Image 1 (spheres, rainbow, N blue to C red):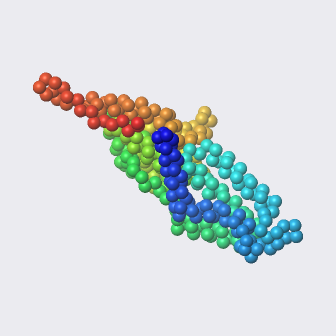
Image 2 (tube, rainbow, N blue to C red):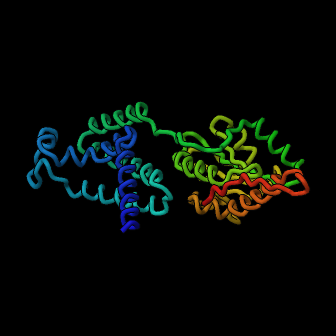
Image 3 (tube, rainbow, N blue to C red):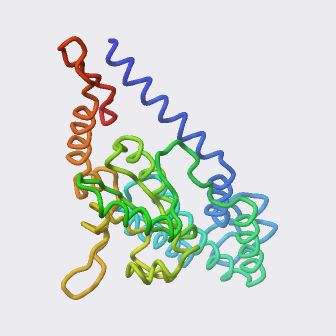
Length: 297
């Protein structure tokens, strides 16, 4: 019974969090924009005042072309989000395609309605931008100079040090979706020997050229994660195939932890911390102070 109640409390908490997210202005306005045509076209008395009745169709009914566009919208959202790794990615893609479909539907009825809808989307985007991640993390934000200095210092160290860097831009939806995932990983695996950092390629575009990361509007390399070992690049995602094409990467927490071998690096780093905590011999007895907490549990 206790286990069942625990599961129910977990479900209730998830539902509460989902409802809370819906009423964030950014999400709420995008949801309303996404269903605006369907509501206006099918709900009296709005539809009767804006749309004229046809011989074969009432003013509050969808014609076959409108039904076709809405069906295509559902298929497009399903196709684009089937590999989504978070609700943030799913929501961002759904908002984009639904607003595009609504614009087309309004334009078919009257170009003036399409123009009004486009202006409304722009205004709401400026007034209610997508909220940035504001939770806890152990991530250091680098400038080009500070990153170069950090990598140079790491090359001279005898013991292994690691730095997992996220190269991102503020305007990229995929980078925004990765923010909470990367923050959570940093909280779980950060140690003295395993650090996490970010650098904004939108602010420092020259670094994109230096590290061979495409920062164009159609780029498939945003975000890019690079793992440095003793100041030298060891691995990056997304990578490239033999033809030089970008290999799509999901950026889920499990994939990042597995592919960059973070758990093993963390465990080895934790073991070194324990060794470093061995205190001087007191009365011929070595006292060991273990202040390391397994944050992955």
